Image (cartoon, rainbow, N blue to C red; front, side, top):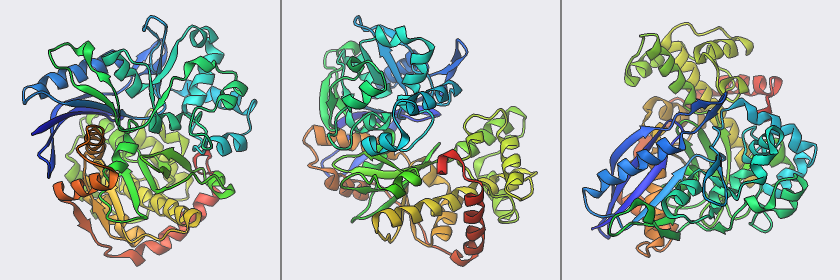
Length: 490
């Protein structure tokens, strides 16, 4: 039995999963889970990188009780980074993407490079927290921190460095910085120069499935080999999509919903620019996708209700939502007001009213508003993908934690008029482990990896039940979306 350690850092929690591969099937077991929520430091939201490292250490210690792991891979959310100096010390801890200070960098970037040029060069969706804007905001705040730094390391690369001492950047995650060229597939040095960023900050790029080094800094007689998995968690999740043929449509559903397909080369057409699509690096392809706000909306509602003493199990909330009146409170889930509101309930009420509806008053109505709005927004994005690619899809594969939300899966099937295949729920960890198997030579490629997922995971299937009931609400949603265009869907 071959053991693998998959470290998956999601936007709300991290987990260390132990993979066990017997040559025919792969299983994953959770060994440790820990918080990844940001902390406040000097007036900013930052990721507690030392806390993350301790969580990883504890999880690996627990995993080792089942036997030594041959390898270790880390995936995490994109765009956030730490700066290290020549001595390997942290110059700048990773600021969290929800910190509002990043937005200062957007206009600084556009004064130097037009949005059109930036998109044609990188193919990446405009989001105010992309790494390029974070760097420019930091440059405006204190340029010395950039100049005295040896390297800018995205979270998985920073943690790999803490384990091995090796300074490298994994390609799938690097593409999300909006600083990698779609033409050369390397750092866009001309773009870096025009933006006025120090060229030396960006280390050598390595492909997913390549080794880093043994995790010598962990200690122990036989430290696991650290592997560059597809270190952007969505890239890992897409590796684990159990599609049998291409083209396929996926929704990586968690704190964020990533709605997309895969294409052999980036699509940087005028329509892709207008609709604000992203061409993020995949394993042997590009992931053409758009970020949708996702289950962050529901997670924050649950957190708010817990603080008020009104907590309820998710299944109870979903039952209340199913009983609530349909299509009364829909809104655009991608409005900037939802990034980090003081009260998610109030933000949703205000959004529903702004869209000409009524403010949802009880929990069921509010949860229904969130799930209906997400399903409707998924349909918008899918229609745009079909226009950009000419693809037609026979099903949608929902992976990640959101695949366990049966009501959202059913409403997604109804709204899109397509069957939904849901699972695996820990898709990023699965993709992480699969790329370790590729690096170790146990699995030949991603297609064989997908066969392994299909052999190892039981999927839930949701057939469309009432698709026509969504047509008129969808037409109204599209109309309101056009009238109330926001920066995230402009």
